[in-house]
Structure formats: structure tokens, C-alpha cells
Image (cartoon, rainbow, N blue to C red; front, top):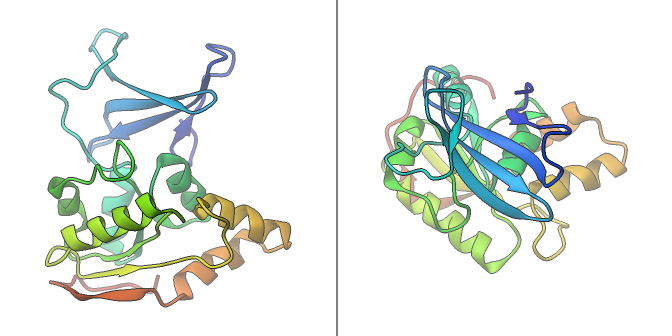
Length: 205
């Protein structure tokens, strides 16, 4: 797995575009989401003997990049919640703490909020109806759990655009990654009414 959480199988299967490993707090692989070309997804879990079982029956669901998220929450960093592993890795590539839930829009579960308890959270929606609804769902679910929950809507994106598109557009303007990270951290997302809860001591990010 590379340092952005994404692992590729070069030459193993031409239909596989990317493999995203979901890990427990200690870093052990619980399951993987396999992205196939052009855009299809399948899930698998290790069988304990070096092979894969292509279902998630009986597997605990968790947030993507969980060990990194837990460390970032402890440091008081802002956590960006996005829709999809690709977007999560794009933000991690900027040096930001980011995560997503498995299954995409509309699949947030209450248990995903526990690692974010007391954290400062910014939810970035995709630019479509499903993305907006999902962001509101996440923000509502984190009420009273996260220390602060805000929705960060990115400007200048086309319909169905996402944070990966935003990063690419800004890079075409010759913006350095460090500049993009600072821009996202300095933006003032809109706060949802009543979306404050117990807070951890915060750092400077």
C-alpha cells in the first residue's frame, strides 16, 4: 500500500483500477474495496490463509484510513469527510486528514461517528443531489458526537464534481499542493444548527 492508502495491482488484473484497504485501529486489514474499470466496485475480506473471500459477511465496517484518522483526531486536526476512497486519498496526498465510509452516498452508519468523537469535522459533498443529501446525513449523524461539524461546499465545480476535480482544477492553475491544503484548512464551512458537541483540545490544523 502506498503512503496515500491506495494499493494497485499492476499487471495482476487489467480490470482492476485500484484496491482500497480498510484497516482496524492497529493497522490490520479488515477488508478491501476493489475498484474495477470503468467504474464498478466489489468487496473482499482476507480468509486468514492468504486468499480472499468476496463478501463482507460478518466483517466489522469501519472508516477508511482509520489509523490515520485516529492519530489526527488525537492531534486536534480537522478531519475532512468525503464521498469515496479516491477523494480521501486525494486529500491525504495534500497532507490532510480525510476519511470516507464504505458503500458511497447514503451508507453512513452511526458507528462510523465514534472515531470522530470530539473532533472538528468538515464534510465535503459531491456536487449532485445524492452528494448533498449524504453530506447532510453525515452532519446530522455526528451531532453531539463530533466537537464541531460543518459542511464545506467547494465553488467552481461542474455538476457531479468532487474534491478530486477541485484539486485537479487548482493544479491546472499552477497552485502548489501546500497552497491547496492551506486553502481548504482556512475556508470557513457553514456550520449546521446545533452541530456542536464535546470538544477535544484542538491543534493548529
